[in-house]
Figure (cartoon, helix red, strand yellow):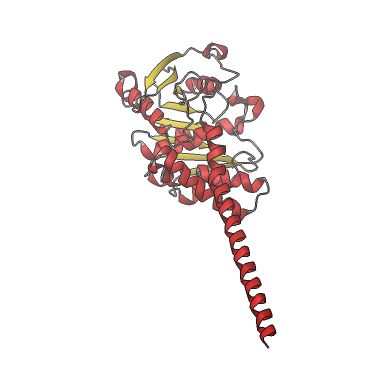
Length: 326
């Protein structure tokens, strides 16, 4: 009998030790997984944003048969940004252009500025912080660049040549996100054209993970860690500085939100999230195909050749700003 009890005791001891080992191994696995989920966005994002973007191609206004004035403006947080001004006599509105995270330089939009000038609109091409000739060694992902836009808006408001001239912010890709964020943050901006904008940085990060074949549950968890990291990196205001949140702050000001249906850089789901929160008056256009910059590639420098694209833009601008009394 005692032998049976000893066997039972040994079995129970073995079972208890095995359970303790399983629990310990499970705890280790969970800890490693959590640590990986926490560290991964820090490593990726630090490599992604802690840099200054230098462009292989920088364009001159003269290449497009127009002239521009380059100026440097200081932001409220002490960053000197470069702006290229394309003047128009008695403009119907002045457009602030913003480009993408890594390319192209905003100077690629001189072709747009030329066509706008011919239609009575002025342009200010803003090279955002940490890009090109502008200062900065950290890309703000839309969390900080509204300070850049605000500096340009303050300049416009300070000079007589733009007295009572409406201001429109127009951005594509990360510039589209910055444009929407700026429109929500800066009441002095009168109109918005936002193209291929992500709904939030953590959204597009998670979308990219899913497109790479990572399970949705992992992407969803990672998204929350990334959001927390963004708050520590850019300040806790970052919780609210996203296009899908800022679009709710635009009041009745006119806006046009544009995306392409097969965009493989910023999936169209980002457009859907933004439009879900947008006021009913906000105009929108989904262009068929994979056209991240919306205009057809061959027509980028001469956008008027892409008739569908250019008519959409001019119709929006003329409808909302074309009847301004000069």
